[in-house]
Image (cartoon, rainbow, N blue to C red):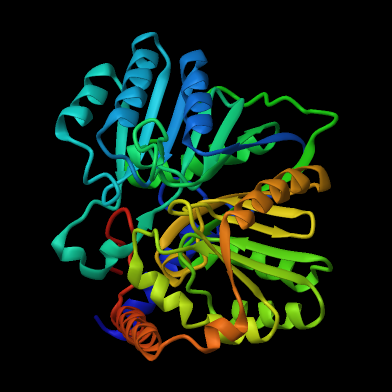
Length: 415
């Protein structure tokens, strides 16, 4: 492809995310406004958030919107499939948006059960050999929205891995939030944007009449839609103006150079900077090794690093003073380069106090790493960090250098 044509394809894609014409209307900016009057509840671990989500599905009267990266056949999926099917059969319109890669372990029988019940399904960026590196674009978001009244988001998928009942000793530790109020309308709009691009269908739903809570909190939906990175921008802005604390929780820690620099400078000026990351219990050991290569310089500058011990830590939480962001975005290069992500931001001292109390429990169940201890780690550990870091750097450089930007839902016009 010649350079003018390549540039044209890039401009078409960018216009879709900046409010340009997609052929089916306009997509507004994906950095949503701050809205007051919301109620945001913290739900820790699968026994709490699955039960609340299923209860709301059972109470649905008009429509259900479910967007998931990870959905795997098993006990938890059975419960959701049964609840979604029952809702569809009683006349509720059910829209299920799944990532094609993240649902490889969803059995054909389970998919057919959903279709037979009348659930409308769409798959994000179906895997195809001819797409080559464009297959790397994935929908990593997690959202359940019921009747335009309540929305759930966080880091968990629909899989037995997050269920204490199914994995009592090694279930994944994660956090979801339940949102009510004006922010729910933005979550609905964001789902509609991706649904339209994947299915070609405009969602025609009843107007949202979300309740305004006089004692509610201020909140905002922030997103990452490659090649735009609104969620990352929110985090960087908040870290730069923080006065008391920066606590970051992530399942995968491969931060950018800018984020590492901001963390070091914040710790030097006396801010309480803490990182909570997985310990030895992780689903990607190589990613852990890559992230550990950044420990020494961060520790030397006063950043405190905690590795969670009981189970795999899968949560994604950013806490800067009284600003909190909870959702699907990790602090890794994959999130910033390839994934669609969405976080719920909240600016509230009361909600921040709830989150910080939950994180204090996690810190107490973690191993804090000291600078002296890390500086004296054995040579073979340093070698593993360097090896996997070199692999990650090469992979990132190669994929970005060779990738031709194209739509994640269909080919762009050849003009």
